[in-house]
Structures are given as structure tokens and as C-alpha cells.
Image (cartoon, rainbow, N blue to C red; front, side, top):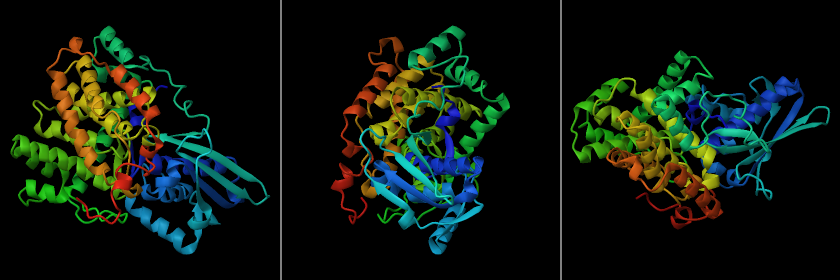
Length: 471
């Protein structure tokens, strides 16, 4: 596969890339396909079946809501998140839906969205969409949400990105290092050359800047909004209180004023650690409340990369204005290596595929921005993932809240520690390669019980009573 940085980093809405973003995009692709075939106006009813992990934890992750938004023709990358509740309430109240925003049909979520176990051999994140037509016929498609917001028709999971042609094809970490050595270029330069095969340089910069802006806005929003998260667990937002304490009660009307004060504040270890934790919590509280975030590489792990990048910009030595672009190019390429060599799906590999990968991505980006060599950047990624191997996905109540939000803070702090260790090491002395840790992650995912793969059937999901007070 030839994966773009813009495939890894996607602007969307929480709470889950595999359970929200993927099904939303699949439903939208389904109705757009009907429209292109001239069959949209013939549709009398649409039936949706959610299978496997989508059936077991989809309700907590907003899968039924996401499918309705996709069928309605909403584009997740651009829709105003505040407009989503009104659309869903209209469907619930009237029992009617504007399919693709233009053809009205009867739609009752209780009747038309059903759940069932995965058939033998099926991907755990599969949904079936069927349109009943006026002539008595039926249009049916099965889609797979393969993690990180990537989708494919069933049976075509590996086909979507195979047609691209990059000047520096990269399938394994050694390929990336070889191109860096042959060209004498840092990782971000090699990755940028590949991106230029898909879009103009100005579009690359604009896209990276937009991704960073959304990340920054989600951190700012999370740091300035209190209350209780939706979903029924009674989880309190904590980032706003932490932000207020760290700012001694001061408030700022925009991101720039806020960050300037953070930069000018104390830099002792405790304060810096508190800020990193606050940044990560903030983004994932926005994600858990169906807010706008950037998949990095998933929604459940969306807070790690922005928290570490904010750490660099606020507290790093010699941070430069264009460092977010460098950071994102390096981090995105590391994310693509894990997708090619293992998985980004918690339903396939547990939380090591989400928080573990995001921590590895952030560690590599931070190392590059800190002056590290390509080899040191990949060492940092290896260290970060090595200490997330075997991490289970066991969401309490099927929600992206406990333990998911705190795990972003832990992933961010591990990424920073991994980067600092990598910058102090000679890569030639390292016994564990990134290739080896990707292989270990893949094998661990294969051996892991399905109870720990986003099914809410094991671990904390069953150890913590749903009525228990938050720790």
C-alpha cells in the first residue's frame, strides 16, 4: 500500500475512527453510489446490520448515529459538529430521513438498524447496508471499517491504496532508512517527496497547517469546557479544571493568547508533566463528546500527537514555526508503517494498535524536531511501542472514556520519555528494531483474546461496575 500522511491524519468527529468515522463514511459511500447509479430516487427503505465489534460496542461509540449521518449525506470532514444532534433528533422524532440530503424515506433506527454476531471469517468491524427499491429489487453492500477511519468493501480491504506511485516506495522501516541514506535527506523530506506525487507543495503545507489547527483548537476547547461527558458513566471533564489551576485562574479568548501564557509559565518537571497530561485529556474529552478532532491515527488515541507536539512548541528547545509540518510528516509515516505491518484497529489488535501506535508516532516526530537522525527517530518509535505491547482495549460501558482518555495522557508521557532516550543513544547499539517491534505487535494482536479487542467483554470493561463513581 502507498499511504499518504493525509490518510493517517483525518479531520472528523469523535468518538471512534473505526466505530464512528468508518461507518459514517461507508454509509455515505453507499448512498453516493446509489445516486451515481441513478437509483437513489427508487429507494423505499434502507436496512443496516452492524456485526462483531460494531454490534457489541457500537452504541457506546456512536455507530448507529454515525450511520444515520452518513445516509443523510453529511460529510464528516466538513460538517459542523454542532449540527449533528439536530439532524439525529429530526430523524428520531419524525421517523423520516432525507437520504443523501435529497430523497425522503421512512427510517426508524430501532427497526432499520440491527445487530448480529460476525459470520465465520468476517472482519470484526463489518456493516451491511441494503436498499429496498420500488421495483422490488435490492441494492446490498458489505463494508469493513479497518481502523483509523479507513474503509473498504468487504474482500477489498487491501486494495484501496495500491494504485498510487511514489518516488520512494516504503513498506518497512528499512526502506525508509535506505531512502534517507541514499538521498542524504531527513525523514520529513523523503515523505514530502512522496506526498508531492499526490498534491502540489502548497496544498501539502495548507493541509498540514489545517490538521495542526484542528488539533490545537480541540486542545483549546477541551481546556475550556467543564461538565460531565455524555454516555451515562458520569465521567467528569478534568482538563478545564487542570487548565484553570495551571493558569492561576486566568482565561484567554483564543488559542494564541492561551499558548503564549503556557510558554511563559513555569518549566519545572511537575508543571510540564501536568500540561502534557492536560493537553491529552482535553483533546480526548472533546473526542468523547462527539466533537471535532483529528484521527491520529485513531480517534480514541487522538490526544497523544497534539499533546506531544504542544509539549515541543511550548517547552522544547529551539522550536521553530514550521515544526508542526515536520512533526506531522514524520509521525504520519511511522503510523503508515504500523498500518502496513500490523494494524491500527483495536478490534483487531487491542489498544496497542491505537495508543501504542500514536505514542510511537509522537515519539518519532518529537525526535525529528529535536534534531535527531532518521535512525534515532525510528528508535524512539520502537521504544514507545515496545512498552505498549499487549495493551488491551477494554472500554467500560463500550464508551471511549474509561480507560481511554487517561491512556492518551500516558501515551504522551511515554512518547516524550522514548524520544529523550533515543536522542541519548547510538542507534547502532540498539538490539531491538522498529521492524521487530511491529512484527511483535502483529503477533501479539493475533494471539490476543477477542475479549480484549474492543468488545467490552473483558478487563476493565467487566471489572468496573457501570454505576461505580469515577476514580
